Amino acid sequence: MSQEAVQHPLGDLVRQSSPFDINYAPDDSWVKDKVIVITGGASGFGAGFVKRWAAAGAVVIAADINVEKGDQLIRDVRKDTGNPSLHFLHCDVTDWLSQVNMFREAVRLSPHGGIDTVVANAGIAGGKQQFVEPIDLDLADPPRPDLSVIDVNLTGVLYTAYLAFWYLPRNPGSSPANPRCVPSDTHRDRHLILVSSVAGLMPIPGAPLYGASKHAVVGLYRTLRSMAFMHGVRVNMLCPYFIDTPLVKLDLRLVLAGGTMGKVEDVVDAGTRFAADPRVVGRAVSVGPKLKVRQDADGEWSLVEGAGQDAEERAIWEVYLHDFENSDVFQRRMVAIMNRATEIKGWSGWARDTVVAITYGLRSLWR
Image (cartoon, helix red, strand yellow):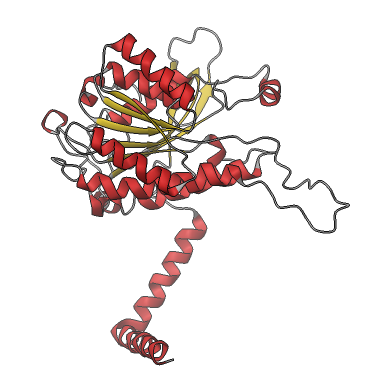
Protein backbone atom coordinates (compact mmCIF):
# COMPACT_ATOMS: atom_id res chain seq x y z
CA MET A 1 0.00 0.00 0.00
CA SER A 2 1.16 3.53 -0.69
CA GLN A 3 2.58 5.09 2.45
CA GLU A 4 1.67 8.66 1.50
CA ALA A 5 -0.58 10.40 3.99
CA VAL A 6 -4.09 11.34 3.01
CA GLN A 7 -3.95 14.96 1.88
CA HIS A 8 -7.62 15.88 1.63
CA PRO A 9 -9.24 17.12 4.90
CA LEU A 10 -12.46 15.17 4.34
CA GLY A 11 -10.47 12.04 3.56
CA ASP A 12 -8.68 12.57 6.86
CA LEU A 13 -11.97 13.06 8.68
CA VAL A 14 -13.42 9.74 7.53
CA ARG A 15 -10.03 8.02 7.97
CA GLN A 16 -9.77 7.01 4.33
CA SER A 17 -6.40 5.59 3.35
CA SER A 18 -4.31 6.73 0.43
CA PRO A 19 -4.69 4.96 -2.92
CA PHE A 20 -2.68 1.78 -2.61
CA ASP A 21 0.12 0.73 -4.86
CA ILE A 22 -1.19 -1.91 -7.27
CA ASN A 23 2.33 -3.34 -7.50
CA TYR A 24 2.53 -3.78 -3.74
CA ALA A 25 2.46 -7.49 -2.84
CA PRO A 26 0.18 -8.26 0.12
CA ASP A 27 1.66 -10.05 3.11
CA ASP A 28 -0.74 -12.97 3.54
CA SER A 29 0.78 -13.83 6.91
CA TRP A 30 -1.08 -10.92 8.54
CA VAL A 31 -4.38 -12.84 8.33
CA LYS A 32 -2.96 -15.67 10.46
CA ASP A 33 -5.33 -16.34 13.38
CA LYS A 34 -7.80 -13.70 12.13
CA VAL A 35 -11.41 -14.87 12.14
CA ILE A 36 -12.96 -14.33 8.72
CA VAL A 37 -16.62 -14.94 7.84
CA ILE A 38 -17.43 -15.35 4.13
CA THR A 39 -20.98 -15.58 2.79
CA GLY A 40 -21.30 -17.45 -0.47
CA GLY A 41 -18.18 -19.27 0.62
CA ALA A 42 -18.78 -22.63 -1.07
CA SER A 43 -17.83 -21.71 -4.64
CA GLY A 44 -16.47 -19.01 -6.93
CA PHE A 45 -14.77 -16.07 -5.24
CA GLY A 46 -15.82 -17.34 -1.82
CA ALA A 47 -14.06 -20.67 -2.27
CA GLY A 48 -11.00 -18.82 -3.57
CA PHE A 49 -10.90 -16.66 -0.45
CA VAL A 50 -11.28 -19.73 1.76
CA LYS A 51 -8.35 -21.52 0.12
CA ARG A 52 -5.91 -18.61 0.16
CA TRP A 53 -6.65 -17.34 3.64
CA ALA A 54 -6.75 -20.84 5.09
CA ALA A 55 -3.27 -21.42 3.66
CA ALA A 56 -2.12 -18.29 5.51
CA GLY A 57 -3.41 -19.64 8.82
CA ALA A 58 -6.69 -17.74 9.21
CA VAL A 59 -9.72 -19.07 11.04
CA VAL A 60 -12.15 -19.19 8.11
CA ILE A 61 -15.89 -19.67 8.39
CA ALA A 62 -17.56 -20.30 5.05
CA ALA A 63 -21.31 -19.78 4.99
CA ASP A 64 -23.45 -20.91 2.08
CA ILE A 65 -26.84 -22.34 1.22
CA ASN A 66 -25.17 -25.26 -0.62
CA VAL A 67 -24.33 -27.69 2.17
CA GLU A 68 -22.83 -30.39 -0.05
CA LYS A 69 -20.36 -28.05 -1.76
CA GLY A 70 -19.53 -26.22 1.45
CA ASP A 71 -18.80 -29.34 3.48
CA GLN A 72 -16.67 -30.79 0.69
CA LEU A 73 -14.72 -27.57 0.27
CA ILE A 74 -13.83 -27.38 3.94
CA ARG A 75 -12.76 -31.03 4.05
CA ASP A 76 -10.57 -30.57 0.98
CA VAL A 77 -8.96 -27.33 2.17
CA ARG A 78 -8.27 -28.75 5.64
CA LYS A 79 -6.46 -31.63 3.98
CA ASP A 80 -4.54 -29.42 1.55
CA THR A 81 -3.46 -26.77 4.08
CA GLY A 82 -3.30 -28.69 7.33
CA ASN A 83 -5.34 -25.89 8.88
CA PRO A 84 -7.93 -27.36 11.29
CA SER A 85 -9.57 -23.98 11.99
CA LEU A 86 -11.90 -24.08 9.03
CA HIS A 87 -15.66 -24.37 9.34
CA PHE A 88 -18.73 -24.52 7.16
CA LEU A 89 -22.09 -23.14 8.29
CA HIS A 90 -25.35 -23.39 6.40
CA CYS A 91 -26.83 -19.96 5.73
CA ASP A 92 -29.61 -18.62 3.54
CA VAL A 93 -28.60 -14.96 3.22
CA THR A 94 -32.15 -13.94 2.31
CA ASP A 95 -33.37 -15.20 5.70
CA TRP A 96 -32.67 -12.80 8.57
CA LEU A 97 -32.73 -15.47 11.29
CA SER A 98 -30.48 -17.73 9.24
CA GLN A 99 -27.86 -14.98 9.09
CA VAL A 100 -28.26 -14.13 12.79
CA ASN A 101 -27.75 -17.78 13.75
CA MET A 102 -24.75 -18.05 11.44
CA PHE A 103 -23.05 -15.02 13.00
CA ARG A 104 -23.76 -16.30 16.51
CA GLU A 105 -22.22 -19.66 15.66
CA ALA A 106 -19.24 -17.95 14.05
CA VAL A 107 -18.57 -16.08 17.29
CA ARG A 108 -18.91 -19.34 19.22
CA LEU A 109 -16.39 -21.03 16.92
CA SER A 110 -13.96 -18.10 17.15
CA PRO A 111 -10.98 -18.88 19.41
CA HIS A 112 -11.05 -15.35 20.84
CA GLY A 113 -14.81 -14.85 20.76
CA GLY A 114 -14.99 -12.30 17.96
CA ILE A 115 -14.92 -11.68 14.22
CA ASP A 116 -12.16 -9.75 12.41
CA THR A 117 -13.41 -9.64 8.82
CA VAL A 118 -16.79 -10.16 7.16
CA VAL A 119 -16.96 -10.70 3.40
CA ALA A 120 -20.43 -10.04 1.97
CA ASN A 121 -19.85 -12.20 -1.08
CA ALA A 122 -23.05 -14.21 -1.63
CA GLY A 123 -24.71 -13.40 -4.93
CA ILE A 124 -26.58 -14.85 -7.88
CA ALA A 125 -26.87 -13.79 -11.49
CA GLY A 126 -30.42 -15.05 -11.88
CA GLY A 127 -31.89 -16.58 -14.99
CA LYS A 128 -33.39 -14.75 -17.93
CA GLN A 129 -34.94 -11.65 -16.44
CA GLN A 130 -38.37 -10.97 -17.96
CA PHE A 131 -38.50 -7.44 -16.61
CA VAL A 132 -38.83 -5.17 -19.64
CA GLU A 133 -40.13 -8.05 -21.78
CA PRO A 134 -43.16 -9.28 -19.84
CA ILE A 135 -44.67 -12.62 -20.74
CA ASP A 136 -48.24 -13.95 -20.55
CA LEU A 137 -49.76 -10.72 -21.85
CA ASP A 138 -53.06 -12.51 -22.32
CA LEU A 139 -53.55 -12.84 -18.55
CA ALA A 140 -56.06 -10.58 -16.82
CA ASP A 141 -53.52 -9.47 -14.20
CA PRO A 142 -49.77 -8.92 -14.60
CA PRO A 143 -47.65 -11.72 -13.11
CA ARG A 144 -45.47 -10.86 -10.16
CA PRO A 145 -41.79 -10.43 -11.11
CA ASP A 146 -39.15 -12.78 -9.77
CA LEU A 147 -37.03 -10.62 -7.47
CA SER A 148 -34.81 -13.38 -6.11
CA VAL A 149 -31.75 -11.56 -7.49
CA ILE A 150 -32.65 -8.55 -5.36
CA ASP A 151 -33.33 -10.79 -2.35
CA VAL A 152 -29.87 -12.38 -2.50
CA ASN A 153 -27.69 -9.60 -3.91
CA LEU A 154 -29.19 -6.68 -2.02
CA THR A 155 -31.32 -7.77 0.93
CA GLY A 156 -28.82 -10.50 1.78
CA VAL A 157 -25.91 -8.03 1.61
CA LEU A 158 -27.80 -5.53 3.76
CA TYR A 159 -28.40 -8.20 6.40
CA THR A 160 -24.73 -9.18 6.31
CA ALA A 161 -23.50 -5.58 6.52
CA TYR A 162 -25.90 -4.80 9.36
CA LEU A 163 -24.72 -7.80 11.35
CA ALA A 164 -21.09 -6.94 10.57
CA PHE A 165 -21.60 -3.52 12.16
CA TRP A 166 -23.14 -5.26 15.16
CA TYR A 167 -20.30 -7.72 15.73
CA LEU A 168 -17.12 -6.03 14.43
CA PRO A 169 -17.01 -3.18 16.98
CA ARG A 170 -17.44 -5.86 19.68
CA ASN A 171 -14.41 -7.82 18.47
CA PRO A 172 -12.31 -8.40 21.63
CA GLY A 173 -8.85 -6.87 21.44
CA SER A 174 -9.61 -4.80 18.36
CA SER A 175 -9.01 -1.07 17.92
CA PRO A 176 -10.76 1.41 15.63
CA ALA A 177 -9.56 1.13 12.04
CA ASN A 178 -6.70 3.51 11.30
CA PRO A 179 -4.95 3.92 7.93
CA ARG A 180 -1.80 4.98 9.79
CA CYS A 181 -1.61 1.90 11.99
CA VAL A 182 1.43 -0.38 12.04
CA PRO A 183 0.34 -3.83 10.82
CA SER A 184 2.84 -5.69 13.01
CA ASP A 185 1.36 -3.95 16.06
CA THR A 186 -2.25 -4.51 14.98
CA HIS A 187 -3.44 -7.93 16.08
CA ARG A 188 -7.20 -7.79 15.52
CA ASP A 189 -9.40 -6.16 12.89
CA ARG A 190 -12.82 -4.63 12.22
CA HIS A 191 -13.28 -5.09 8.51
CA LEU A 192 -16.16 -5.40 6.05
CA ILE A 193 -15.56 -6.30 2.40
CA LEU A 194 -18.51 -5.74 0.08
CA VAL A 195 -18.57 -7.59 -3.24
CA SER A 196 -20.34 -5.68 -6.01
CA SER A 197 -19.57 -6.05 -9.71
CA VAL A 198 -18.65 -4.13 -12.83
CA ALA A 199 -22.45 -4.20 -13.25
CA GLY A 200 -22.50 -1.77 -10.32
CA LEU A 201 -20.30 0.66 -12.24
CA MET A 202 -21.87 0.50 -15.70
CA PRO A 203 -25.05 -0.80 -17.35
CA ILE A 204 -25.23 -4.45 -18.38
CA PRO A 205 -27.99 -4.77 -21.02
CA GLY A 206 -30.37 -7.63 -20.36
CA ALA A 207 -29.76 -7.76 -16.61
CA PRO A 208 -31.72 -4.88 -15.04
CA LEU A 209 -32.28 -6.56 -11.68
CA TYR A 210 -28.70 -7.74 -11.36
CA GLY A 211 -27.47 -4.28 -12.33
CA ALA A 212 -29.84 -2.63 -9.86
CA SER A 213 -28.67 -4.88 -7.04
CA LYS A 214 -24.99 -4.29 -7.73
CA HIS A 215 -25.45 -0.51 -8.15
CA ALA A 216 -27.15 -0.59 -4.75
CA VAL A 217 -24.13 -2.31 -3.20
CA VAL A 218 -21.91 0.44 -4.63
CA GLY A 219 -24.22 3.03 -3.08
CA LEU A 220 -24.06 1.17 0.24
CA TYR A 221 -20.26 1.12 0.11
CA ARG A 222 -19.91 4.81 -0.74
CA THR A 223 -22.23 5.74 2.11
CA LEU A 224 -20.80 3.36 4.71
CA ARG A 225 -17.20 4.33 4.12
CA SER A 226 -18.09 7.95 4.89
CA MET A 227 -19.50 7.01 8.30
CA ALA A 228 -17.93 3.67 9.29
CA PHE A 229 -15.07 5.52 11.03
CA MET A 230 -17.51 6.39 13.83
CA HIS A 231 -17.61 2.69 14.69
CA GLY A 232 -13.95 2.06 13.93
CA VAL A 233 -14.85 -0.26 11.04
CA ARG A 234 -13.00 -0.22 7.75
CA VAL A 235 -15.09 -0.85 4.62
CA ASN A 236 -13.68 -1.84 1.23
CA MET A 237 -15.28 -3.09 -2.00
CA LEU A 238 -14.53 -5.43 -4.89
CA CYS A 239 -16.13 -4.92 -8.32
CA PRO A 240 -15.19 -7.90 -10.50
CA TYR A 241 -15.54 -7.78 -14.27
CA PHE A 242 -16.79 -10.91 -16.07
CA ILE A 243 -14.85 -13.60 -14.20
CA ASP A 244 -14.68 -17.30 -15.04
CA THR A 245 -17.06 -18.57 -12.33
CA PRO A 246 -20.34 -20.54 -12.28
CA LEU A 247 -22.17 -17.18 -12.37
CA VAL A 248 -21.17 -16.78 -16.02
CA LYS A 249 -23.66 -19.05 -17.81
CA LEU A 250 -23.44 -20.45 -21.33
CA ASP A 251 -25.39 -17.63 -23.02
CA LEU A 252 -23.11 -14.98 -21.52
CA ARG A 253 -20.01 -17.01 -22.37
CA LEU A 254 -21.17 -17.05 -25.99
CA VAL A 255 -21.61 -13.28 -25.92
CA LEU A 256 -18.10 -12.89 -24.48
CA ALA A 257 -16.56 -15.33 -26.97
CA GLY A 258 -13.57 -13.69 -28.64
CA GLY A 259 -13.28 -11.22 -25.78
CA THR A 260 -11.65 -11.59 -22.38
CA MET A 261 -12.68 -12.84 -18.95
CA GLY A 262 -10.88 -12.40 -15.68
CA LYS A 263 -9.71 -15.11 -13.31
CA VAL A 264 -10.85 -15.91 -9.79
CA GLU A 265 -7.25 -15.79 -8.58
CA ASP A 266 -7.02 -12.09 -9.44
CA VAL A 267 -10.20 -11.28 -7.51
CA VAL A 268 -8.83 -13.27 -4.57
CA ASP A 269 -5.55 -11.35 -4.82
CA ALA A 270 -7.43 -8.05 -4.73
CA GLY A 271 -9.45 -9.20 -1.72
CA THR A 272 -6.25 -10.25 0.02
CA ARG A 273 -4.83 -6.75 -0.47
CA PHE A 274 -7.75 -5.58 1.66
CA ALA A 275 -7.85 -8.41 4.20
CA ALA A 276 -4.10 -8.62 4.84
CA ASP A 277 -3.41 -4.90 5.30
CA PRO A 278 -5.28 -3.06 8.09
CA ARG A 279 -4.09 0.26 6.63
CA VAL A 280 -6.40 -0.08 3.61
CA VAL A 281 -9.54 1.82 4.55
CA GLY A 282 -12.37 2.96 2.27
CA ARG A 283 -10.95 1.76 -1.04
CA ALA A 284 -12.62 0.00 -3.98
CA VAL A 285 -11.21 -1.86 -6.95
CA SER A 286 -12.50 -3.33 -10.17
CA VAL A 287 -10.88 -6.60 -11.20
CA GLY A 288 -10.73 -7.77 -14.81
CA PRO A 289 -8.47 -9.83 -17.05
CA LYS A 290 -4.74 -9.25 -16.84
CA LEU A 291 -3.71 -6.95 -19.67
CA LYS A 292 -0.51 -5.20 -20.71
CA VAL A 293 -1.11 -1.46 -20.49
CA ARG A 294 0.79 1.80 -20.59
CA GLN A 295 -0.06 5.14 -18.95
CA ASP A 296 0.67 8.35 -20.86
CA ALA A 297 1.65 11.75 -19.51
CA ASP A 298 -2.02 12.75 -19.14
CA GLY A 299 -2.79 9.74 -16.98
CA GLU A 300 -4.71 7.90 -19.70
CA TRP A 301 -4.22 4.16 -20.11
CA SER A 302 -3.89 2.31 -23.39
CA LEU A 303 -3.55 -1.34 -24.31
CA VAL A 304 -0.09 -2.46 -25.42
CA GLU A 305 0.03 -5.10 -28.11
CA GLY A 306 3.05 -7.31 -28.34
CA ALA A 307 6.09 -7.10 -26.10
CA GLY A 308 6.03 -3.47 -25.02
CA GLN A 309 9.04 -2.88 -22.81
CA ASP A 310 7.50 0.00 -20.91
CA ALA A 311 4.17 -1.78 -20.37
CA GLU A 312 2.87 -3.19 -17.12
CA GLU A 313 0.53 -6.12 -16.62
CA ARG A 314 -2.41 -5.48 -14.35
CA ALA A 315 -5.86 -6.81 -13.55
CA ILE A 316 -6.73 -4.50 -10.62
CA TRP A 317 -7.98 -0.94 -11.09
CA GLU A 318 -8.98 1.39 -8.30
CA VAL A 319 -12.42 3.01 -8.62
CA TYR A 320 -14.12 5.91 -6.81
CA LEU A 321 -10.59 7.05 -6.13
CA HIS A 322 -11.30 10.71 -5.36
CA ASP A 323 -14.83 10.74 -3.95
CA PHE A 324 -13.79 13.01 -1.10
CA GLU A 325 -11.74 15.31 -3.31
CA ASN A 326 -13.78 15.69 -6.48
CA SER A 327 -17.41 15.45 -7.45
CA ASP A 328 -19.24 15.91 -10.70
CA VAL A 329 -20.04 19.40 -11.96
CA PHE A 330 -23.75 19.28 -11.03
CA GLN A 331 -22.97 18.15 -7.48
CA ARG A 332 -20.33 20.85 -6.99
CA ARG A 333 -22.62 23.54 -8.29
CA MET A 334 -25.59 22.42 -6.24
CA VAL A 335 -23.60 22.11 -3.00
CA ALA A 336 -22.00 25.50 -3.63
CA ILE A 337 -25.41 27.12 -4.12
CA MET A 338 -26.81 25.48 -0.97
CA ASN A 339 -23.79 26.58 1.06
CA ARG A 340 -24.12 30.13 -0.24
CA ALA A 341 -27.82 30.16 0.65
CA THR A 342 -26.90 29.13 4.20
CA GLU A 343 -24.32 31.91 4.43
CA ILE A 344 -26.85 34.50 3.29
CA LYS A 345 -29.42 33.40 5.86
CA GLY A 346 -26.78 33.62 8.61
CA TRP A 347 -27.30 32.89 12.30
CA SER A 348 -30.69 34.60 12.36
CA GLY A 349 -31.91 32.30 9.60
CA TRP A 350 -30.56 29.28 11.48
CA ALA A 351 -32.34 30.34 14.67
CA ARG A 352 -35.61 30.98 12.83
CA ASP A 353 -35.48 27.58 11.07
CA THR A 354 -34.67 25.87 14.38
CA VAL A 355 -37.73 27.38 16.03
CA VAL A 356 -39.89 26.33 13.08
CA ALA A 357 -38.51 22.78 13.26
CA ILE A 358 -39.15 22.48 17.02
CA THR A 359 -42.65 23.88 16.60
CA TYR A 360 -43.34 21.35 13.86
CA GLY A 361 -42.18 18.53 16.13
CA LEU A 362 -44.35 19.68 19.03
CA ARG A 363 -47.40 19.99 16.81
CA SER A 364 -46.81 16.46 15.56
CA LEU A 365 -46.83 15.19 19.15
CA TRP A 366 -50.06 17.03 19.97
CA ARG A 367 -51.95 15.57 17.02
